[in-house]
Length: 100
Image 1 (cartoon, rainbow, N blue to C red):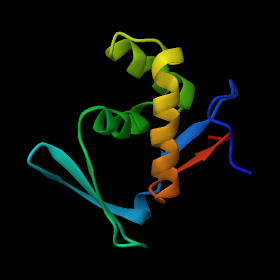
Image 2: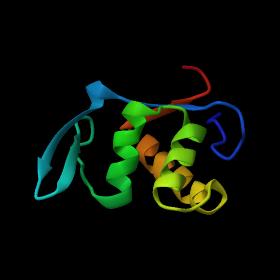
Image 3: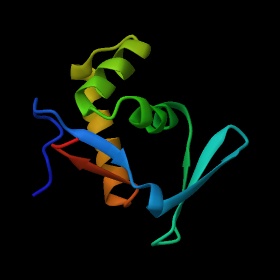
Image 4: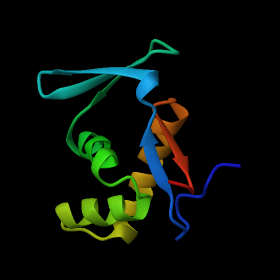
């Protein structure tokens, strides 16, 4: 069972470094999933979340930091962040666990 991102327990997002290659092109970060061959382009908020995973793998802290950066609240932006993190997880680019 996958962890519920909306719960208040500590969840950790970690990049699956062995699963992708990345490069910067024209202000975007392009990710290639090595298992599927699918490419993803991240910019704006998506890129900010991707970078924050390295600095702040705790999902709740990541949401708080992003909400502050965008002058919002975790109640407003949290569901969108959860959705994006789930997309990254389903794309096999990150894992989300309740353990560090």
